[in-house]
Amino acid sequence: MNQQTLFDQGFDMMVLGMGTVFAFLITMVLVVVLMSRTISRFAPNVTNVPASGKDNAAQPQQVDALTAKIIKAAIDKHRAR
Image 1: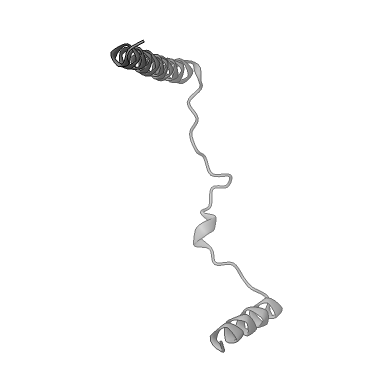
Image 2: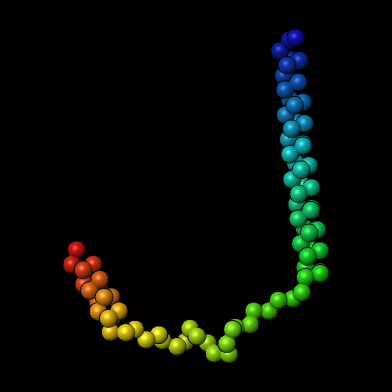
């Protein structure tokens, strides 16, 4: 075997391998797109409805005195560093 034959065989293997990977990736993209369209067609529409009619984020939460003291002590200790 001469050098050119080995180079040609290596190039052929490279093209075959890259072509196989490219074909697989194209097939995978098409399958995922098809699956997405199928699922969106048959799946029910889901709307996000809050559990209660009130907005819980707007209401401030109460902290008891012990928890407030612990938080204050932790902040003071952190600032003392």
